[in-house]
Length: 193
Image 1 (cartoon, rainbow, N blue to C red):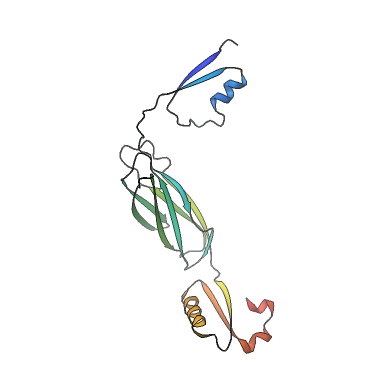
Image 2 (cartoon, one colour):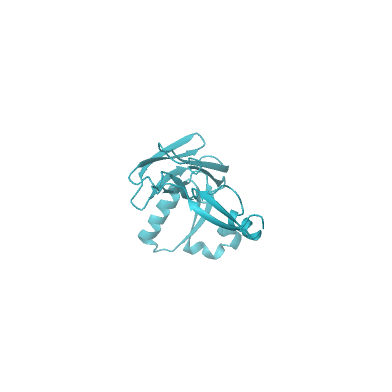
């Protein structure tokens, strides 16, 4: 080998290659020695760690969108998290905790059928290393058809049935069909829904 070893000065951040330099050099029989060149102080870098969104919903349904943040170097900072759905914008402020994380939830009522894009942004803090990891999009498939629910009720259904009826009949995304016990014999599998 003309090159027996390489000394690599690195800040420790990935450079976007699919193969690590050590693997490539090792394959050529060259030894690599890495020297950390980054400051010991953690720099601010808020990022979207996880986004929990249901894959499907129905028109009129309200869904919860949970956003988890990671914020090394930003403990105690307030971060504004923005959710855009069509023309609607919501912003929640969250504080990065001692464990360098934060979470927030949004409630979104879906009003249009079809694929619906949700854009989530953690608004950048001053002095952040990068804001490239502060944005993400998710999609929800919104159905125009209501959820069809058939409730079979006995003569003594009572309060539980009344509560269920009230909750389901208020949901605009539910098509409720109620069948009394005396009519159950006339139901077919296709007639249930």
